[in-house]
Image (cartoon, rainbow, N blue to C red; front, side):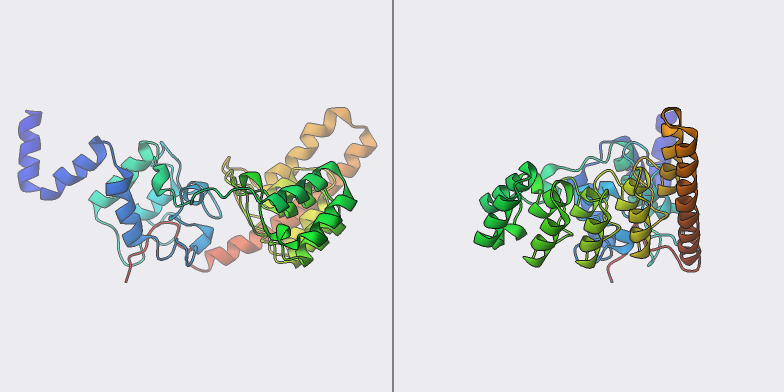
Length: 328
C-alpha cells in the first residue's frame, strides 16, 4: 500500500520525488549544497561582503557563524540558517528575493542534519603557508622574554613583523601574550596587522585581554573588537569572564564591542561576568567578595545598557541576512 501511495504521489506531485530524495539519501556537498550557496548566498556572505559577519565561502567561517552561530551540525531544526529559510521568526526570511523551492530547502536541512560535512578540497581555506624564519625568530625572543634580541631582530628584519609563524601565529600575537606594551607598539609601527588571525581564528586582541594598554594600542591600530575565533568567543566575552579586566571591558565597549554576541556554547558576556563571582566565592574573604560584586554589577550594568541599545537598534531594521540571497 505504501508503495502504491508513493507512486501516486510521484505522478500527481512531480516535486515530491525530488524533495523526498533530498531528505532520504546522503546529501553531497559538492553537487547539491555548494551550487545552492553560490547561487543564493555568496553575493552577501562571501569574499566581497559578509552581512552580519557571516560568510559561506569558507568552511571555518561558515561553521563559526557571524554575530551568533548559524549552522549547528546534526541539528537542522535548531540551526538559524535553516530557520531563516522557512520563516520570519528571526527577522526577514531569506533569500530577500523570494523563498527557495521546498526541495532546495530540504536539501540544505538534510545536509545539516547529516553533520554539515564540507570536504577539505572545497573548504576555501587555501594551502597553509610555511612559517617565516624572521617571524619565528621574533616570536622566540618574545616567548623567552629577551627584549634586546627582539629589538635587534626587528631592526635587522622589519619584514618579519608582518609575517607569520607556525599555525598562523604572528609576532604581534606573541607580543600581546608574552611581550610588553612597547613590543606591541614597535610591531604596529613596523606594519604588523592586528586583524591577522591564526589558524583557529584568534587575533592579537584576544591574547592581550589582561593588559589594558596593549588593548588600547591594538584598538588604535584598527583591531576589530568583534573578531571571533572558531569557538565563537569575542574579546569582550573573554574579558568579562576574567578577574581584573573591568577597564578592558569598558574600553572594548567604547570601541564598539557587541555586548549581545553569543558564543558557540550559547553564552554571553553578561552571563560570564556573573559567573566570575560564583566561581570565586568560596576562596575569598567577605571584603574581597563585596568589592568583586560591586565591580561585576558595574560591568553587568554597562553590558545591559549596551546590549539593550544594540538589540533595540536591531529591532528597528530587518536583521542582516545569515541565510541566502539570490544573485541578481
